[in-house]
Length: 427
Image (cartoon, rainbow, N blue to C red; front, side, top):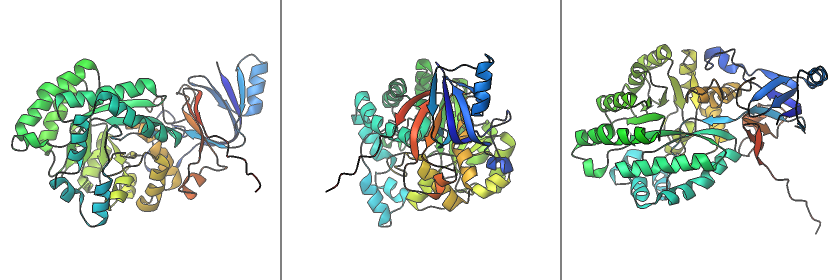
């Protein structure tokens, strides 16, 4: 089945010219077509003007089964949220209040909160409870425009509990229309039972967790939180090199709280992405540019923790491919809305709306090694797109605090549509 979409006010293609990502000045190139048309099945079959579509149909060169009038609205690629921790149970709302009262992320962690608070909750939960808790959160991400989402484990920190999390992620991927990309992150924090046995926990990850994850095919990537108080650069390298032996590609939480040199490590390992980067050094920026590692920036975390924002303009000026993601998690950024992320990136990181949109679509797909199939609207790619209740795309950021998504299409099928507002009755 194929559908012809007509009366598209602006079709924002983010056409790539065959490149994996956009960087530097190219980050502003949206490839907008006005009064456009598009034929989609599971993949995009054709893009052009309505008149051309009908001419090609008359010539027997283009076919469709159904016609859909977009009503002059804006069509953009679906958001690719390439960094989340969206499967968990429990609330850490009290920690949010503590931070407002002056406690730091490190203070809360030292008192037994932070990541470990969620770990204790996840260890008590069943796989079914994890799925049930995550499902509404992921549906909310979808209705705000996310069509592909990466989800990390890392709230179990035992072999059994990490596998439980990854199995829950796999179940969600089969139940929901979202495209879900799983990442193993047993190196999210050091569990208290290994506080005085760091080397033993690293060995557990390398010798037991990674083989178990790989044997079940539960993850595509391995991530490590390389940071003071978490995992050293040496430990991160040992874990990620072992992960590569098991076929898991590396990604890295890098230079979030200190200029540790984790960006340089990510580049040296050929990591797909280096994420956070609040304190990345000039040497780290240069290394990321040379390696082609995507810099995934998470402005929602800076907002929640009241931290400096990552140096987006320096990264862009250096030619590093920049992506945006939510970091959706229960502690440092409880937000699944990519539209909010675009707004924060423009207001506090200095991105232009065009740059933010590319970073949240094509470059997010590149951070998951999927930009050959996702992140732009081009013939042959998956037909994952949003119909926005807008007349021009810049309004997506300009008019903030509301959901502009009217429809979400994944694989050429509408999977969510905003219901019509209720009629106003006279009193």
